[in-house]
Length: 233
Image 1: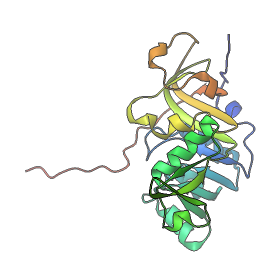
Image 2: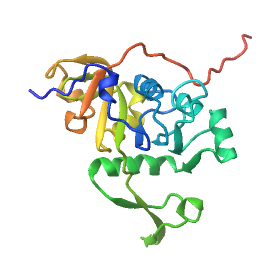
Image 3: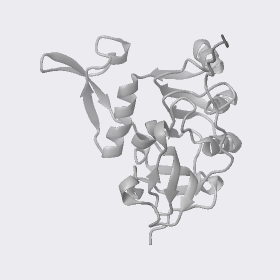
């Protein structure tokens, strides 16, 4: 029986080194690999290139790595909730590559599928297309986008088994689903880890073939990125 379980986050990320490119799942604060991010902070690795939809908030998620200046380059689609990110970007301390959200997702999915590049109309005629090949398809201009090349993809799932099969809950599926298997090594942290064979195959979102290491995370914090309330009438 295939067993990809490792005992903890330290073992899962033991060979992450400074200068690597890392994909991190999540959307806002939903479905982020909290335990793994905390371990990267603890390891003190620097000069990282991080691929993630956004950069967390100042004191949570990738914001923790930004506080320690462990990220050298950020590839993302939305960064509006992090003041430290804004400060580092405007000061030139942080290299930023802003990517249309759908393009970012597809660049992950292409890497997952082993496709080196693809054409998309998103970004044509804007700064996004500068220096990239463009071509007309069906009367519309498209930009050639290359798949990402990452050393690690770190994803967060609700439930997984020891063979690496994953189930996500609700919107926490987000970028986790397309990042699994899109790097040389995929690490999955899960809230619940069960023996292989206990998950119903009909409900598995990502098969274990895309995952190299899996561990059970601890103490997840269910944060709300922005709380909006109305006054009682």
